[in-house]
Image (cartoon, rainbow, N blue to C red; front, side):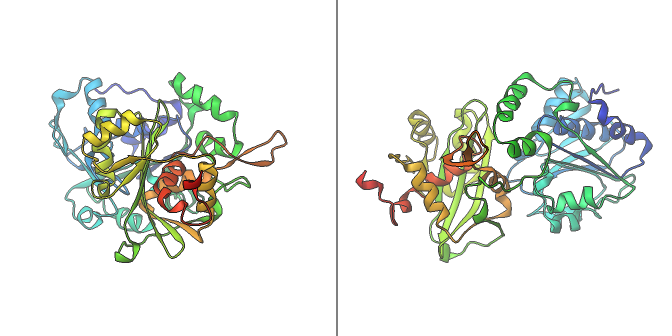
Length: 401
């Protein structure tokens, strides 16, 4: 018997393991609702039902470290279930039933996923990033015994395929639950402190992050009107990549971005962020997520020279500190706003969402100022560092400052 505690609002989800009233379970909402923790617990419980395969997936998975593998291992260990499981490098097997967890990204593995034998259960994390094409392939794929698909996400835009597929168009076999921090009796104090800080800021941003509302383009948005989501294939016409890094601190994430300038348009091809990234793991994380960082110069926030030195020693040989000058933030923003468009690839949609939220401060009358808010700016800062070599090429020339 596995002892699992969960917010009361999720009782129908766990009851469904025995009643089987629903074959699709949607958990969505803002930060702090314990959605991902519930997904892990449900996955482990599913593995005790039969010998079916449990696919743990998200749209983009470049390595096992991008999956819920680590969270599953922690849950199994914390619940003293290690005697029941074989924990392998890329799989987890339940010895008692023969069930097997496998891990994959949908975008580049959909053909292989279609041919998985005994696929019964699917756990989709960060589902807000899943494309319609992936859903069209994935939804009919589980066919073994009593199939179930769990979809966990933070809503972003109303027309996103995941929201449309599993909320707007939900049928009687789909259980839909919106859950937030208010429903989580174990909501940690560290997150509560962050929530209260965000509450004092932009109301739209707060509603998106904490209330699970849609991300809306505000009148104070800095780059929102330039942003477009569009997949593209790199070729020789794009030239060399521009790579920028913003270092994290405490609850702020480290962010890395790989972009290209072409035809007066900026193309963001790759972007990733991680909170509480350990210094010893930073170089490996950067190389894993942006492989070009070993072949081309990258520019990082110069406020952390010791971090730059460590990352360079650990394998990112071409990293260098960015240059800052009086007005460099404003110059960088002006240059970004001068593009015809900023195109964001689907594998960088977390970056897209943050850039939409990147806004100017508002005054006491709730009117926009021209001062950038010091929030939702990790990817924006990394983007400014990346394009530093071309900012001075136009109307701005920091070399004379």
